Length: 223
Image (cartoon, rainbow, N blue to C red; front, side):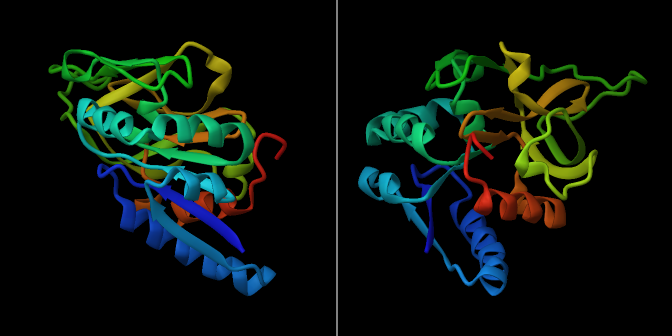
């Protein structure tokens, strides 16, 4: 049994993520015979017992960090990334960083060295046309590393984004994918057992489902 814990702190697209994982897990089971069980939980013991962990998130960073800290889930994420594959999505990715500009400044988990910045109120494309914030919709992602989660996903595939803030990394070697929306943004990060995406793979149709399928068979840093 391949057990996946989706961390529940009240701020994620939990059921969309769970349904997408169940979908790709069912296809994998028909090939390998190994079933996938998805558990939505805030219980640290269940997170610790899972084979792999998903750390999703939507909403305001201050609210997210308040709930993560109240439930003690930062320690669960920190422990998980030492021993098993972890996929962080959207605000889950941002929460891994050191600090966010959102809500007049919020300290994040500090598990990765990076900052979360606001797109700004006057974001424009290369032609000078004004861009809407949040960045919402489909955008191409250029792969900048040869990571197992990209296997079978064409470079520059389109993924679905919804965000007003974007990540900047102190260590460029940890950037696994880039996109452009007025400015170049980090679309994906890879560091040891962590793979994190600013986009929502569960909403990204074929490319997103392929990435989630890869996550279910990825063995972490040694993959």
